[in-house]
Length: 333
Ligand code: AVI
Image 1 (cartoon, rainbow, N blue to C red):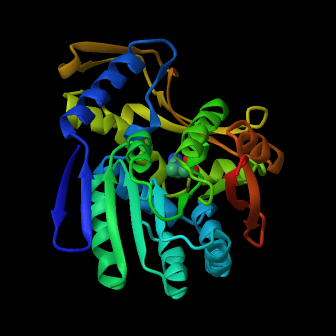
Image 2 (image 1 turned 45 degrees about the vertical axis):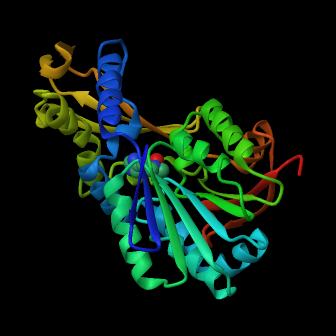
């Protein structure tokens, strides 16, 4: 990682873009070279993918963002009060940070100085959000970290200072399977000190129709978001995917508690990927699994927290109880 300082209140810790490209190539070779085929969902977020995701968040069917925003609009002051005398807000997967503003404002209203540490894979999203936040909040300092969560957390451990609140909003936890979610929360717990708090936005289990519509919207934005993964392989690895030879699919699996996203081949086909020296063969109807979005019951939230050595201090819901914000602390603190 290298650190770039621009005037005054903004620093960026950057990971090596060549390392990112190598890990994408490796994941594609692995995921498309085996049966059943899959691609890791973290690669959905290049610059185009991040823009499409922002569009998803504004869709009428994608209730998650609005429900979480509703909670923050009504409860930000209460959340800031529950977090105690904290001077640092760390955000995992910050994206555009548009909802985070509500918390930043609540903390600043308390008269505090605030250091905001957004950690995100998308360098462009970090730069854009920092620019607008710094313009709006003169008492804010930003220390951005471009890279994967684990990398950001390693950096936090070495950087112990005032109590902090770590936020993991947007139900990003849902893109981990349940065992990985517990493992990742354990890493976060290890980076937390006694007074630190963790605020996690978690989408709740609900009816099939609402869930499948949320992940397969009428205007086809989620389909474009999903297909962008193939377009990215074309752009970065010399792939020859024809996007209209695939169909986006979103299926709710109630037993497993997840929405499964895939790209389904519309015909038998062979696709060359030049940089990998690979030819991918797909049969008509064969799926490339691209993402899972797990949904939780309150019992499942308590369980995953307990497994990670955390406990739920308090939680908030939107009026329709579709979504939850959970404030966690170390169980041993
Ligand atoms: C980022 N993540 C929480 C989104 C979700 O709801 O699982 C990703 C997404 N995929 C399709 N639509 C939204």
